[in-house]
Structures are given as structure tokens and as C-alpha cells.
Amino acid sequence: MWRRQVGALLLRHRSTPSSTLRHHLPLPVPDQSPPLASNLLLRLFTSQSGEGGDGATKPFIAFVLGGPGSGKGTQCVRIASDFGFAHLSAGDLLRSEISTGSEKGELILNIIKEGKIVPSEITVELIRKAMESSDAKRVLIDGFPRCEENRIAFERITGTEPDLVIFFDCPEDEMVKRLLGRNQGRVDDNIETIKKRLKVFESLNIPVVDYYTSRGKVHKINATGTEEEIFGAVHKLFSSLSS
Ligand SMILES: Nc1ncnc2c1ncn2[C@@H]1O[C@H](COP(=O)(O)OP(=O)(O)O)[C@@H](O)[C@H]1O
Ligand SMILES: Nc1ccn([C@@H]2O[C@H](COP(=O)(O)OP(=O)(O)O)[C@@H](O)[C@H]2O)c(=O)n1
Ligand SMILES: [Mg+2]
Image 1 (cartoon, rainbow, N blue to C red):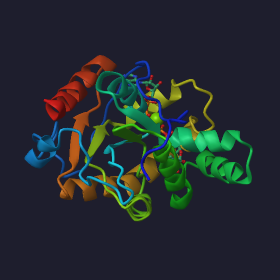
Image 2: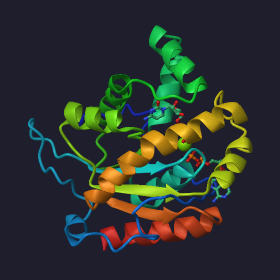
Image 3: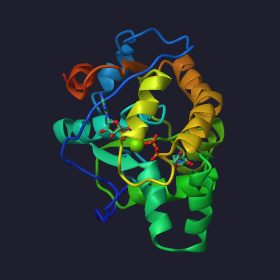
Image 4: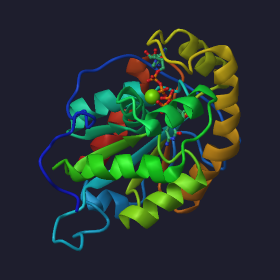
């Protein structure tokens, strides 16, 4: 189920670097987290789940979370490039569906404009298909799960859990500044929608971070500072996984 040819337009494997990040949060997550659990280190980028029902090895899955503008995409590109991960962005998958002009795409567009969360079945299905069409052994899933419903749907539909969750912790004012300067022509990078996205992040995404924290899977990265500084912390984490 997890393999097939790389059709993966959206699985940006070994792409080129880009820019930077930051945050804070009322979380019981210690800053720059404790060393990863030893069982995680031992896995050395192999999946927790071993073989899937069809005999295929499941990839090592890292969920990449953080508020809008915290720098998830920017850092994912660099992780993909330096550590051989496929980069699968939930937002990009949704935007790609919009660009097909389908009815589903129109529904997604209206939800994104409002800063709300697209129904989980739609997003998980897009992620599942993208994973299925890739041979990647290590996958970053960027911007997912955005809420508990997303998380539960992913676990139910794919029958797997992430091996690692990275959380980019960035103050709101910094995220707003970055989003207003992103300049990618996105329908949701305007101040009204940004405010809604930040509310959704606090109320729906933070509980997911809390859940995985309680499962010992979260590694929190201070996402303030330059892109280089943040990647320094990210690099240290991934180097510790592969050493
Ligand atoms: N450390 C940083 N400092 C300043 N700007 C940054 C930093 N990291 C990323 N950016 C810029 O901020 C914007 C949002 O970054 P992005 O990676 O798209 O965040 P996210 O995927 O979390 O929304 C982009 O324009 C990006 O170039
Ligand atoms: N798991 C997800 C991811 C994104 N989305 C939608 O897509 C929008 C953009 O997501 P994104 O991950 O590209 O945004 P950034 O956090 O990267 O700025 C979100 O604000 C949601 O409306 C979603 O509904 N469910
Ligand atoms: Mg992004």
C-alpha cells in the first residue's frame, strides 16, 4: 500500500532550500525538547510499523507542525534536501486539488479562504494517495494533522502513526509578519484570514501537539531567529536520529 512509482509531483523529494522562522505556546512541552526517546533513536529512520499488510515497508513518518508562518515549509525543504526525506505538504496537496477546477477543489478553496479546516477524509485521502505513489522511505508530512479529527482519520485510514512530530514554536506577531510578507499570492495570506487561522491553530492544532507530547513523540524547536539558526537546531535533531 505504501509503495508504487514516484508520480509524486507533490512529494518534493530533495528540493532546494528557501527561507526562515519562530513561536511560544502554553504547552507542557519543554523548550528545545529533551533528547528523543531512546526507542526513537534506535529506530534510525525506520518505521515503527515494519511491514504493511502487502509486505511493503512503511516509511518513517515525521509530522511537521507549527502555526501559520512558523516556517514549516521552509525547514521541510531543507530537511528533505539534507536528510533524504520526501516533503509532502498538506496545504500544497489541497491547493493542487483547487487548481484542477473540480467541485471538490471549489469546496476546498472556500474553506481555505475562511481559514478553516478541510474535512479530514479529503485531506487524508490526498496524503494517502501521494504516499502510495512514492517509494520514499522517509516522509515529512507538513501542516498535518491540523486537528484531532485529522489525526484520528489519518490513523484510521492509513493504519499507522507518525514516528516523530516536530513542532515549530513561534510567537504570533512574528508569524503574522512573515505571512504578510510571504508574497506567494495565497488567498489566505491577508490579515482577516490570518487572524482566523491563528485562532484555529490555537484551538484545534495545539490539542494535537499536546496529544503527541503525551505520547513522547514531540520535538519542539524554537522557531525564532534566522532560517539558518533554526535549521541549526533542526539539523542537530535529524543528525541525532541518523547517527
Ligand atoms: N526564520 C525566518 N525568519 C524570517 N522569515 C522566515 C523564516 N522562515 C521562513 N520565513 C518566511 O516566512 C514565510 C512563511 O514561511 P513558511 O515556511 O511558508 O511557513 P509555514 O509553512 O509554516 O506557513 C515565508 O515567506 C518564508 O520565506
Ligand atoms: N491538514 C490541513 C492542512 C491545511 N488545510 C487548509 O489549508 C490552509 C493552508 O495550509 P498550509 O499548511 O499550506 O498553511 P501554512 O501553515 O503553511 O501557512 C489551512 O489554513 C487550511 O485552511 C487544512 O484544512 N487541513
Ligand atoms: Mg506551509
